[in-house]
Image 1 (cartoon, rainbow, N blue to C red):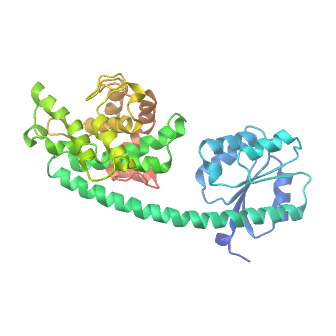
Image 2 (cartoon, rainbow, N blue to C red):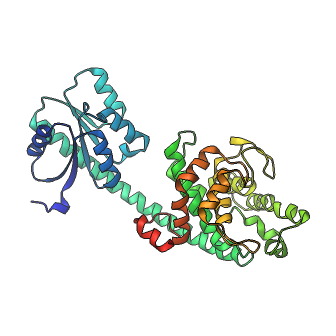
Image 3 (cartoon, one colour):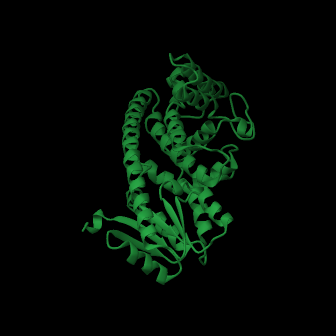
Length: 366
Protein backbone atom coordinates (compact mmCIF):
# COMPACT_ATOMS: atom_id res chain seq x y z
CA UNK A 1 0.00 0.00 0.00
CA UNK A 2 1.19 3.54 -0.82
CA UNK A 3 2.28 5.81 2.02
CA UNK A 4 -0.01 8.74 2.84
CA UNK A 5 2.34 11.19 1.07
CA UNK A 6 2.28 9.08 -2.12
CA UNK A 7 -1.51 8.85 -2.33
CA UNK A 8 -3.36 11.22 -4.65
CA UNK A 9 -5.72 13.63 -2.92
CA UNK A 10 -9.46 13.71 -3.67
CA UNK A 11 -11.83 16.45 -2.49
CA UNK A 12 -15.40 15.17 -2.07
CA UNK A 13 -17.98 17.98 -2.07
CA UNK A 14 -21.43 16.76 -1.04
CA UNK A 15 -23.88 17.87 1.66
CA UNK A 16 -24.74 14.25 2.42
CA UNK A 17 -22.41 12.56 4.90
CA UNK A 18 -23.74 9.20 3.69
CA UNK A 19 -22.67 10.00 0.10
CA UNK A 20 -19.24 11.16 1.28
CA UNK A 21 -18.63 7.92 3.18
CA UNK A 22 -20.02 5.78 0.35
CA UNK A 23 -17.65 7.31 -2.19
CA UNK A 24 -14.66 6.82 0.14
CA UNK A 25 -15.65 3.19 0.72
CA UNK A 26 -15.99 2.53 -3.03
CA UNK A 27 -12.67 4.17 -3.93
CA UNK A 28 -10.78 2.46 -1.12
CA UNK A 29 -7.62 3.24 0.79
CA UNK A 30 -5.34 4.18 -2.10
CA UNK A 31 -6.28 7.86 -1.92
CA UNK A 32 -6.23 10.73 0.58
CA UNK A 33 -9.65 12.29 1.17
CA UNK A 34 -10.85 15.75 2.12
CA UNK A 35 -14.57 16.42 2.46
CA UNK A 36 -16.68 19.58 2.16
CA UNK A 37 -20.39 19.84 2.90
CA UNK A 38 -21.13 22.83 0.65
CA UNK A 39 -19.60 24.92 -2.10
CA UNK A 40 -18.28 27.68 0.16
CA UNK A 41 -16.33 25.16 2.21
CA UNK A 42 -14.95 23.64 -1.00
CA UNK A 43 -13.75 27.04 -2.26
CA UNK A 44 -12.11 27.72 1.08
CA UNK A 45 -10.23 24.40 0.86
CA UNK A 46 -9.09 25.06 -2.72
CA UNK A 47 -7.74 28.48 -1.74
CA UNK A 48 -5.46 26.87 0.83
CA UNK A 49 -4.52 23.54 -0.76
CA UNK A 50 -3.18 23.37 -4.31
CA UNK A 51 -2.11 19.74 -3.97
CA UNK A 52 -5.63 18.38 -4.58
CA UNK A 53 -5.64 16.02 -7.57
CA UNK A 54 -9.39 15.63 -8.19
CA UNK A 55 -12.73 17.03 -7.04
CA UNK A 56 -15.93 14.96 -6.86
CA UNK A 57 -18.73 17.53 -6.89
CA UNK A 58 -22.47 17.38 -6.16
CA UNK A 59 -24.78 19.94 -7.79
CA UNK A 60 -27.54 20.55 -5.24
CA UNK A 61 -25.99 21.89 -2.02
CA UNK A 62 -26.72 24.70 0.45
CA UNK A 63 -24.84 28.06 0.60
CA UNK A 64 -23.14 27.56 -2.80
CA UNK A 65 -24.27 24.90 -5.26
CA UNK A 66 -22.09 22.94 -7.65
CA UNK A 67 -22.63 25.27 -10.60
CA UNK A 68 -21.62 28.27 -8.50
CA UNK A 69 -18.45 26.42 -7.50
CA UNK A 70 -17.66 25.73 -11.16
CA UNK A 71 -18.35 29.36 -12.14
CA UNK A 72 -15.99 30.54 -9.38
CA UNK A 73 -13.32 28.10 -10.54
CA UNK A 74 -13.67 29.33 -14.12
CA UNK A 75 -13.44 32.97 -13.05
CA UNK A 76 -10.00 32.38 -11.50
CA UNK A 77 -8.87 29.71 -14.00
CA UNK A 78 -8.82 27.05 -11.26
CA UNK A 79 -10.78 24.70 -13.50
CA UNK A 80 -7.53 24.22 -15.45
CA UNK A 81 -5.71 23.18 -12.27
CA UNK A 82 -8.28 20.92 -10.57
CA UNK A 83 -10.14 18.29 -12.64
CA UNK A 84 -13.80 17.93 -11.60
CA UNK A 85 -16.14 14.97 -11.85
CA UNK A 86 -19.78 15.82 -11.12
CA UNK A 87 -21.76 13.10 -9.31
CA UNK A 88 -25.43 14.04 -9.18
CA UNK A 89 -28.95 12.71 -9.36
CA UNK A 90 -29.86 15.41 -11.91
CA UNK A 91 -30.87 13.83 -15.23
CA UNK A 92 -31.91 16.80 -17.38
CA UNK A 93 -29.85 17.18 -20.53
CA UNK A 94 -29.56 20.95 -19.99
CA UNK A 95 -28.03 20.35 -16.53
CA UNK A 96 -25.48 17.88 -17.89
CA UNK A 97 -24.60 20.18 -20.80
CA UNK A 98 -24.12 23.11 -18.44
CA UNK A 99 -21.72 21.08 -16.30
CA UNK A 100 -19.61 20.11 -19.31
CA UNK A 101 -19.65 23.69 -20.62
CA UNK A 102 -18.24 24.80 -17.26
CA UNK A 103 -15.30 22.47 -17.69
CA UNK A 104 -16.04 19.21 -15.84
CA UNK A 105 -14.26 16.15 -17.22
CA UNK A 106 -16.99 13.63 -16.32
CA UNK A 107 -20.67 13.63 -15.28
CA UNK A 108 -21.86 10.54 -13.39
CA UNK A 109 -25.53 10.11 -12.53
CA UNK A 110 -26.86 8.58 -9.33
CA UNK A 111 -27.60 5.83 -8.57
CA UNK A 112 -24.10 5.01 -9.77
CA UNK A 113 -22.19 1.81 -10.38
CA UNK A 114 -19.16 1.28 -8.12
CA UNK A 115 -17.07 -0.05 -11.01
CA UNK A 116 -17.80 3.03 -13.16
CA UNK A 117 -16.88 5.38 -10.29
CA UNK A 118 -13.58 3.61 -9.65
CA UNK A 119 -12.66 3.38 -13.33
CA UNK A 120 -13.49 7.01 -14.20
CA UNK A 121 -11.72 8.37 -11.13
CA UNK A 122 -8.62 6.31 -11.94
CA UNK A 123 -8.65 7.31 -15.63
CA UNK A 124 -9.02 11.00 -14.78
CA UNK A 125 -6.22 10.90 -12.24
CA UNK A 126 -3.87 9.13 -14.68
CA UNK A 127 -4.69 11.62 -17.46
CA UNK A 128 -4.11 14.67 -15.29
CA UNK A 129 -0.99 13.22 -13.69
CA UNK A 130 0.52 12.95 -17.19
CA UNK A 131 -0.58 16.50 -17.99
CA UNK A 132 1.00 17.74 -14.77
CA UNK A 133 4.28 16.10 -15.66
CA UNK A 134 4.28 17.85 -19.04
CA UNK A 135 3.28 21.13 -17.39
CA UNK A 136 6.13 20.82 -14.90
CA UNK A 137 8.60 20.49 -17.77
CA UNK A 138 7.26 23.72 -19.31
CA UNK A 139 7.16 25.48 -15.92
CA UNK A 140 10.80 24.58 -15.30
CA UNK A 141 11.74 26.04 -18.68
CA UNK A 142 9.76 29.22 -17.93
CA UNK A 143 11.38 29.43 -14.49
CA UNK A 144 14.83 29.23 -16.04
CA UNK A 145 13.89 31.98 -18.51
CA UNK A 146 12.48 34.07 -15.66
CA UNK A 147 15.69 33.68 -13.68
CA UNK A 148 17.64 34.87 -16.71
CA UNK A 149 15.31 37.87 -16.96
CA UNK A 150 15.99 38.71 -13.32
CA UNK A 151 19.74 38.55 -13.91
CA UNK A 152 19.36 40.86 -16.92
CA UNK A 153 17.28 43.26 -14.87
CA UNK A 154 19.82 43.22 -12.05
CA UNK A 155 22.61 44.09 -14.50
CA UNK A 156 20.50 46.84 -16.04
CA UNK A 157 19.68 48.23 -12.59
CA UNK A 158 23.36 48.46 -11.69
CA UNK A 159 24.28 50.09 -15.01
CA UNK A 160 21.54 52.74 -14.84
CA UNK A 161 22.07 53.10 -11.09
CA UNK A 162 25.63 54.28 -11.59
CA UNK A 163 24.22 57.14 -13.67
CA UNK A 164 21.10 58.04 -11.72
CA UNK A 165 21.24 57.63 -7.94
CA UNK A 166 17.57 56.70 -7.61
CA UNK A 167 17.38 54.07 -10.34
CA UNK A 168 18.91 50.87 -8.96
CA UNK A 169 16.19 49.85 -6.50
CA UNK A 170 13.55 51.81 -8.41
CA UNK A 171 13.82 49.48 -11.41
CA UNK A 172 13.38 46.40 -9.21
CA UNK A 173 10.43 47.98 -7.39
CA UNK A 174 8.67 48.88 -10.63
CA UNK A 175 8.95 45.32 -11.86
CA UNK A 176 7.54 43.93 -8.60
CA UNK A 177 4.64 46.42 -8.38
CA UNK A 178 3.77 46.05 -12.08
CA UNK A 179 3.49 42.28 -11.78
CA UNK A 180 1.42 42.36 -8.59
CA UNK A 181 -0.97 45.06 -9.84
CA UNK A 182 -1.57 43.26 -13.13
CA UNK A 183 -2.31 39.97 -11.42
CA UNK A 184 -4.93 41.66 -9.26
CA UNK A 185 -6.34 43.49 -12.29
CA UNK A 186 -7.05 40.28 -14.22
CA UNK A 187 -8.73 38.86 -11.11
CA UNK A 188 -11.05 41.87 -10.95
CA UNK A 189 -12.07 42.31 -14.58
CA UNK A 190 -12.20 40.70 -18.01
CA UNK A 191 -11.56 44.11 -19.64
CA UNK A 192 -7.84 43.36 -19.96
CA UNK A 193 -7.50 39.68 -21.01
CA UNK A 194 -3.85 39.25 -20.02
CA UNK A 195 -2.23 35.84 -19.64
CA UNK A 196 0.50 35.12 -17.11
CA UNK A 197 2.96 35.29 -20.03
CA UNK A 198 1.67 38.77 -20.90
CA UNK A 199 2.11 39.87 -17.29
CA UNK A 200 5.67 38.54 -17.19
CA UNK A 201 6.45 40.30 -20.47
CA UNK A 202 5.11 43.65 -19.24
CA UNK A 203 6.92 43.31 -15.92
CA UNK A 204 10.18 42.58 -17.75
CA UNK A 205 9.69 45.49 -20.15
CA UNK A 206 8.90 47.81 -17.22
CA UNK A 207 12.57 47.63 -16.26
CA UNK A 208 13.33 49.79 -19.29
CA UNK A 209 10.80 52.52 -18.45
CA UNK A 210 13.41 55.12 -17.49
CA UNK A 211 16.20 54.08 -19.88
CA UNK A 212 15.87 57.46 -21.58
CA UNK A 213 17.28 59.14 -18.47
CA UNK A 214 20.76 58.15 -19.60
CA UNK A 215 20.32 60.97 -22.13
CA UNK A 216 19.58 63.56 -19.41
CA UNK A 217 22.31 65.56 -17.67
CA UNK A 218 23.40 64.14 -14.31
CA UNK A 219 23.14 67.66 -12.89
CA UNK A 220 19.41 67.61 -13.58
CA UNK A 221 18.82 63.97 -12.61
CA UNK A 222 20.57 64.30 -9.24
CA UNK A 223 19.68 67.89 -8.40
CA UNK A 224 18.84 68.05 -4.64
CA UNK A 225 16.28 70.81 -5.13
CA UNK A 226 13.16 71.51 -7.17
CA UNK A 227 13.80 71.66 -10.90
CA UNK A 228 13.31 74.92 -12.76
CA UNK A 229 10.62 74.99 -15.46
CA UNK A 230 13.33 74.68 -18.11
CA UNK A 231 14.99 71.75 -16.32
CA UNK A 232 11.64 70.03 -15.89
CA UNK A 233 10.94 70.27 -19.62
CA UNK A 234 14.33 68.67 -20.27
CA UNK A 235 13.58 65.92 -17.74
CA UNK A 236 10.27 65.15 -19.48
CA UNK A 237 12.12 64.32 -22.70
CA UNK A 238 13.38 61.07 -21.15
CA UNK A 239 10.14 59.43 -22.36
CA UNK A 240 10.84 60.23 -26.01
CA UNK A 241 14.56 59.53 -25.65
CA UNK A 242 13.81 56.09 -24.21
CA UNK A 243 11.27 55.29 -26.93
CA UNK A 244 13.76 56.35 -29.60
CA UNK A 245 16.46 54.16 -28.05
CA UNK A 246 14.15 51.15 -28.07
CA UNK A 247 13.14 51.70 -31.71
CA UNK A 248 16.76 52.15 -32.78
CA UNK A 249 17.81 48.75 -31.42
CA UNK A 250 18.62 46.04 -33.93
CA UNK A 251 15.51 44.03 -33.16
CA UNK A 252 12.22 43.85 -35.12
CA UNK A 253 9.82 46.56 -33.94
CA UNK A 254 7.00 44.02 -33.85
CA UNK A 255 8.87 41.85 -31.36
CA UNK A 256 6.52 41.67 -28.31
CA UNK A 257 9.17 42.75 -25.79
CA UNK A 258 10.38 45.60 -28.02
CA UNK A 259 6.80 46.79 -28.59
CA UNK A 260 5.98 46.59 -24.89
CA UNK A 261 9.15 48.42 -23.90
CA UNK A 262 8.42 51.15 -26.46
CA UNK A 263 4.89 51.67 -25.10
CA UNK A 264 6.12 51.85 -21.52
CA UNK A 265 9.07 54.16 -22.24
CA UNK A 266 6.98 56.63 -24.23
CA UNK A 267 3.73 56.66 -22.29
CA UNK A 268 4.39 55.86 -18.60
CA UNK A 269 3.88 59.55 -17.75
CA UNK A 270 0.54 59.83 -19.53
CA UNK A 271 -2.51 60.33 -17.32
CA UNK A 272 -6.05 58.95 -17.65
CA UNK A 273 -7.56 62.45 -18.05
CA UNK A 274 -5.19 63.40 -20.88
CA UNK A 275 -3.04 65.76 -18.77
CA UNK A 276 0.14 63.69 -18.96
CA UNK A 277 3.00 63.75 -21.43
CA UNK A 278 4.43 63.49 -24.06
CA UNK A 279 1.31 62.91 -26.22
CA UNK A 280 -1.64 63.77 -23.96
CA UNK A 281 -3.31 60.38 -24.47
CA UNK A 282 -6.67 59.86 -22.75
CA UNK A 283 -8.11 56.82 -20.94
CA UNK A 284 -7.53 53.45 -22.55
CA UNK A 285 -5.81 55.06 -25.52
CA UNK A 286 -2.88 54.62 -23.13
CA UNK A 287 -1.75 50.97 -23.35
CA UNK A 288 -2.43 49.07 -20.14
CA UNK A 289 1.29 48.29 -19.92
CA UNK A 290 2.09 52.01 -19.60
CA UNK A 291 -0.90 52.63 -17.33
CA UNK A 292 0.17 50.12 -14.72
CA UNK A 293 3.81 51.22 -14.82
CA UNK A 294 2.69 54.82 -14.24
CA UNK A 295 0.90 53.79 -11.03
CA UNK A 296 3.84 51.67 -9.88
CA UNK A 297 6.24 54.51 -10.71
CA UNK A 298 4.35 57.07 -8.64
CA UNK A 299 3.88 54.73 -5.69
CA UNK A 300 7.57 53.87 -5.52
CA UNK A 301 8.60 57.52 -5.97
CA UNK A 302 6.40 58.56 -3.03
CA UNK A 303 7.55 55.76 -0.70
CA UNK A 304 11.27 56.16 -1.52
CA UNK A 305 13.81 58.72 -0.44
CA UNK A 306 14.99 60.97 -3.26
CA UNK A 307 17.75 63.58 -3.39
CA UNK A 308 15.03 66.24 -3.27
CA UNK A 309 12.58 64.65 -0.74
CA UNK A 310 12.06 62.27 2.13
CA UNK A 311 9.97 59.12 1.77
CA UNK A 312 6.26 59.17 2.62
CA UNK A 313 4.91 56.24 4.61
CA UNK A 314 3.10 53.84 2.32
CA UNK A 315 -0.39 54.55 3.69
CA UNK A 316 0.02 58.27 3.04
CA UNK A 317 1.38 57.52 -0.43
CA UNK A 318 -1.63 55.36 -1.32
CA UNK A 319 -4.05 58.02 -0.10
CA UNK A 320 -2.26 60.75 -2.06
CA UNK A 321 -2.62 58.70 -5.26
CA UNK A 322 -6.28 57.87 -4.54
CA UNK A 323 -6.98 61.57 -3.85
CA UNK A 324 -5.61 62.55 -7.25
CA UNK A 325 -2.62 64.48 -5.91
CA UNK A 326 -0.29 62.72 -8.35
CA UNK A 327 -2.47 62.87 -11.43
CA UNK A 328 -5.44 60.91 -12.74
CA UNK A 329 -5.20 57.11 -13.12
CA UNK A 330 -7.41 54.28 -14.31
CA UNK A 331 -10.06 53.74 -11.57
CA UNK A 332 -9.62 49.95 -11.78
CA UNK A 333 -5.88 50.28 -11.16
CA UNK A 334 -6.59 52.56 -8.21
CA UNK A 335 -8.81 49.84 -6.74
CA UNK A 336 -5.97 47.35 -7.25
CA UNK A 337 -3.52 49.68 -5.51
CA UNK A 338 -5.91 50.21 -2.61
CA UNK A 339 -6.25 46.45 -2.17
CA UNK A 340 -2.61 45.54 -2.82
CA UNK A 341 -0.69 48.54 -1.45
CA UNK A 342 0.43 46.82 1.76
CA UNK A 343 1.50 43.68 -0.09
CA UNK A 344 3.45 45.71 -2.65
CA UNK A 345 5.23 47.70 0.05
CA UNK A 346 6.21 44.49 1.85
CA UNK A 347 7.48 43.14 -1.48
CA UNK A 348 9.55 46.30 -1.97
CA UNK A 349 11.22 45.81 1.40
CA UNK A 350 11.84 42.09 0.93
CA UNK A 351 12.62 42.41 -2.81
CA UNK A 352 10.22 39.50 -3.43
CA UNK A 353 6.78 39.34 -5.02
CA UNK A 354 6.37 35.59 -4.47
CA UNK A 355 6.99 35.24 -0.74
CA UNK A 356 5.22 32.18 0.67
CA UNK A 357 4.55 33.46 4.17
CA UNK A 358 3.16 36.98 4.09
CA UNK A 359 3.13 37.26 7.88
CA UNK A 360 6.80 36.35 8.06
CA UNK A 361 7.56 38.93 5.38
CA UNK A 362 5.71 41.60 7.37
CA UNK A 363 8.01 40.92 10.32
CA UNK A 364 10.95 41.89 8.13
CA UNK A 365 9.32 45.22 7.27
CA UNK A 366 7.88 46.21 10.64
